[in-house]
Amino acid sequence: MRGKFITFEGVDGAGKSTHVEWFANELRSSGRAVLVTREPGGSQLAEKLRDLVLHEPMDAVTETLLMFTARDDHLKKCILPALSAGTWVVCDRFTDATFAYQGGGKGVDAGLIDSLAKVVHSGTHPDCTLVFDCPYEVSRERMAKSGRALDRFEREGQAFFERVRNAYLATARTEPGRVRVVDSTLTLEAIRAELRSVINGL
Ligand code: TMP
Image 1 (tube, rainbow, N blue to C red):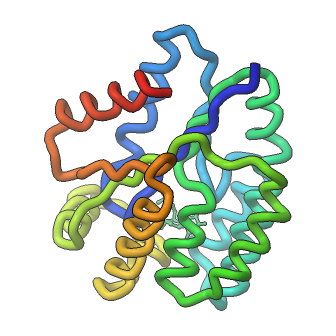
Image 2 (cartoon, rainbow, N blue to C red):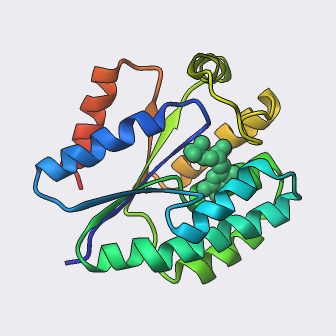
């Protein structure tokens, strides 16, 4: 049987990556084979493109095309073979991020993103998406605490952050059956309880 495809999304600093491994381990402990991966990246070529797209200044359309180039390779080499083998795939970001960051954040035409998604996905869509949400101030505080160097997207200001956040929340309103918003300002225990209930519903 085909595996399920679960994506983790959200604004920078919402702490989603902290929850990915825990979520995958919960799935593993219930007997499922799980692949944890990320975008941009996940395959050898896509990881090289990630380095470019996160650090090299470029136009928003160029950025969009590179995101989908990376995604195409990642899907063909990692995600689709895993799903076909019955492995569940937990992916840290996917196409909802392109709609939020390049579409919402940078004003790239949603029609262009949609067309690229149709070609590249060729029918594969996440079964379930968790959007980790938090206010700007919380995001900044967490990123400052992490002490690591920020990439091009994380260096954007509050207005960009709010556009990205609103785009994610709009997607969640449009597709409530697939997309669930997780309030990442809740305690770790409360978030894990929510994630457990998501797993039980899969
Ligand atoms: P990460 O911080 O979750 O590893 O993601 C790296 C950055 O890439 C993050 O700031 C969001 C951005 N991004 C896009 O702008 N568009 C996309 O399609 C994806 C997958 C990520």
